[in-house]
Length: 358
Image (tube, rainbow, N blue to C red; front, side, top):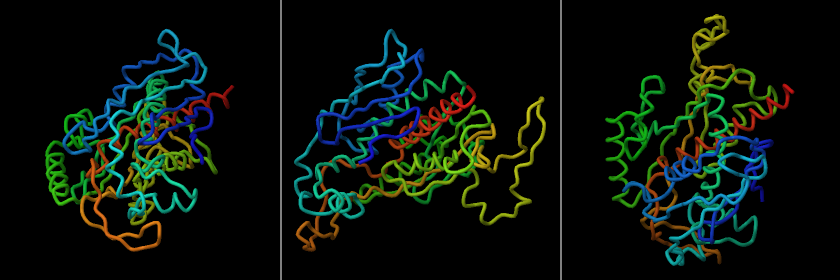
C-alpha cells in the first residue's frame, strides 16, 4: 500500500478513522523555516467535523501534537512527526455494515485487493486520513509563504448552483464568511438552502472546488512525465470523492479556436508576461509565472440515510440504510485538503528547482 506522497518534500501518513490516531511524517522540510503550530491547528480546524450544521456532527477536536523536527519554533531539517488522537468514534454505528459492500464506497474493491477491511468508517480509506495531508500542507504553506506564494480555494459549485468560471470576479477574502466557503454571499445562501433540502431527504450532493495559486515563478515543473499540471492532478485525484480535474480553461478549450485562447506574450515593466491566462499559469508542463488555477469536481457523498440495495460478503442481495453522522456534501471540509495537496506539490517543486539550480 502506498502511503507516501512527494519526492523531496514527502509526506507519509498513517492511521484509520476508528483507530487510536491519525498522523504522519514530513521529510524534506528545510531547516530554519518558522513553524507556527497555531497556523497548523487553524488549518486543521477548517477541516474538522462539527464546524457547522451542514457537515457531520462528529465531535473531534483534531488537536495536532508535534513529536519531532521543530526546535524553538523553527524546523530543524529532520523529519517532522505529528499525531492527532481520535476521540469521538461511534464504531457501533457501523455494525450493520460489517458484512455488506456499500454502493460507491471502497468496501468491495478494498476487500477484493486485501482480503480484509475495517468496516468502521472505512478504515484506511476514510476521509479522516486527510488530517495528515492538511498538516503536511500547512507546513508546506509556511515554506511557500517565505517565497510570497499564496494558495486559496473556494466552493464554486454545489449541484446546479454555480459561480462564473472567473475567480477575478470574486473577493476570495470572503470565502471563510459562510458555511459552504463560497466567496459570493448570495450564491452561498442558495447553496446552503440546497444542501439542507437535500439532507432532509436523506440524500447528498456534489460540487466543484476552485483553487488559485499566486506567486509561483516561471520554471517549475517538468516538460514530459512530471508536468506540473499532472502532479497537481495526481494530488487532487487522490483526495476522497474527487472525480474530475481541469486547469486553466480545461474542457472549455475543446469548443474554442486557437485564435480565441492563445495566451499572447507581451513585455510588462521589463518582464515577459501574457495578455491572458487561459493556460492556467502552466505551459508545456512548466509554470509560466502567471496565476495557477484549477478546478476539482467532487461526487455526492456515497453514504445515504435512506434505503439502498447492495450485495453482502456472502454474495446475497440485501437492502440497508446507513446510520450515524455523515456529511451531506464534502466541499467545505475538502477545501483545506485541496489547498494542502497543492502546497505539497509546490513545495516539492520548489525544492527540486533549487536542487537543479545548484
